Length: 110
Image 1 (cartoon, rainbow, N blue to C red):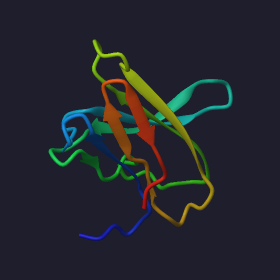
Image 2 (image 1 turned 90 degrees about the vertical axis):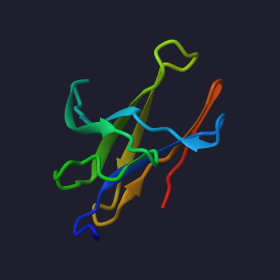
Image 3 (image 1 turned 60 degrees about the vertical axis):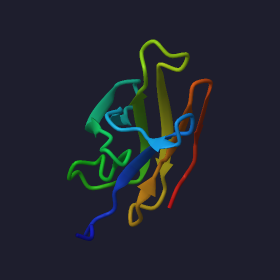
């Protein structure tokens, strides 16, 4: 079913195992100027490693957003925060994460 509104999504791939990372908790926050923030959506990656819509029905707006990835608590990287800027509220934003035991990579996907 096609989306009728733009979304912010993610996909997590564990490059150590070569498989999608299921069950990883991700939160989308709209940071405030005073350091506070509003949680817009959160969820766990599906079996395919994806969360297709972190906005949870909230319309996308221009401005700053923060994705908070809750990684393995006992691992070297136990969490990752990625700040993005939405400059065009008419398009989708996809933020993939490539995860390895001692390395992380993220980029603006399509």
